Length: 245
Image (cartoon, rainbow, N blue to C red; front, side):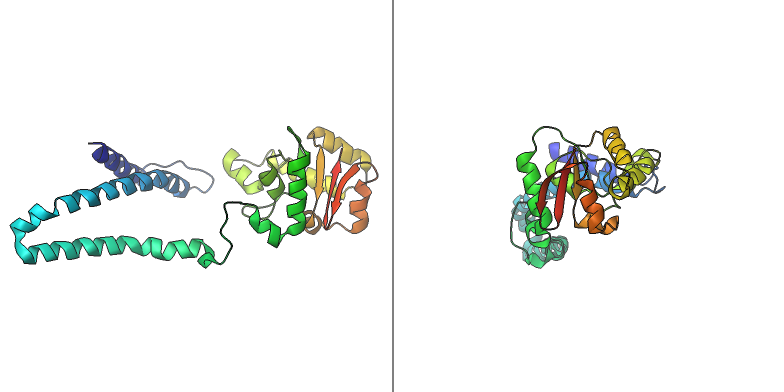
């Protein structure tokens, strides 16, 4: 009964989103489909596992009635279905895992140690030295970019992460549209009063200046050093500097 229930719910979910969806900024049913399909996938996987056991348990009485030819035909059909279902995991797992070329680890930061060692060391420093809630400003950027990874790995709040995701969640750019130029001014402005006012506005405790910020805001060395005239430099290793208000 339980398996029938979750199978029915899963199939109902996949059916409903064919006709009903949340109209977000994409104006299509894409987000609704994949979010509901996540749940349906799990429930159907449980149902399929039990279904395989149930069919296998009933195979012998069916075989006795059908004879040898029927038994082999049934086994061949069942094996074909299983093999068809295995195509996806066999092909998808190596693809998603990068053909297993990387070092196996459960540490989501491990790749940074090799790919971006300076940022990795700075993030470790923040994790060890900053306690409680402290706000950090860093470069903002588009979805799936390297923007806002400092706040992501440290858990420290930031001014603005991926701007398009904010637009997607809120349905407008009223707030994110204000914050983008403010962040740029914090890094680029030659007016210390303006920078300090923006730091106060967003209650920022730390200003992070790494390769991403230097590249995005085109910061020359003297521009980075200018922050040290009115902020306390608490970290300077490799290509990363961190200033405290």
